[in-house]
Length: 348
Image (cartoon, rainbow, N blue to C red):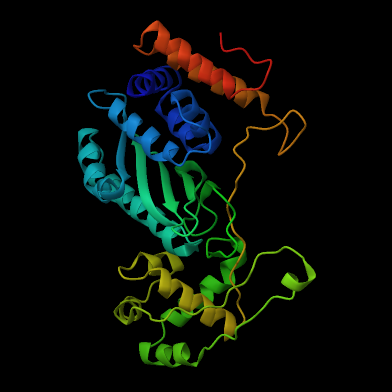
């Protein structure tokens, strides 16, 4: 896997440039195709952790103008130090390095706290170039179901880290999700910020006064399917964090979320207070995109993007041919590649 990863990496960076690699790896469908070529089943949660690990290993000793920081579990906590280490090797400015460390931390915080889909992050990879471009690939696990969910970010597509910043979120649709990154949550975010900037003693009174009723949607009796709104207040709030918000007086929701100690329970409590007391409801619609298809010839889930598919096949085929593998390994890789492309497309 490492040898084949190295061949594909070199091919992409030398023939298409590092920016094209970052764009491609942020595309969840291309990432999935790459993982299949490396030897994974398309539905395996191990795709994310091992593919990223193989790419990171493949970069060791190579000077392609690109770096991969982070990984699974404990390795994810090394991301800031690795961004700094690799950034200094690339002669990036201190400000550029600090900006990327902040982006790495905030992308994880957004997917853990601003989106509450019952998936706890356990894998975080930050990929960046010497130009300061970046991609984030991270994954969370739902402990109850045992299913994983992957989150893709690409710098060129992020205008606001707190408003629909993802290229895609892949996984099984969750029944209940609080999504503060949705456009539908704009008013709720604004009200949450206003509430959080209040004197903590007043906020404590609001918090204690909110007792959401045990609501049952009529839709479950009529058989209609819809996102479920769950008004469940967290048992406690980090009041030290609330004091820090009050003292700091953040100018926007992102600044508030960036404060240490502001996490899942704080975000949820402020959202429910904004909804129940002030009438500014957050989005309860799961933002997951769960199709892994490039497209279908019958137009489902959408028509085939022939140009993208041809380019993807060319990149993967070139990488296999350029990799320093034996003929048997190359033949096996090409066979795996043939399985993930439609009939009629050639890999020779």
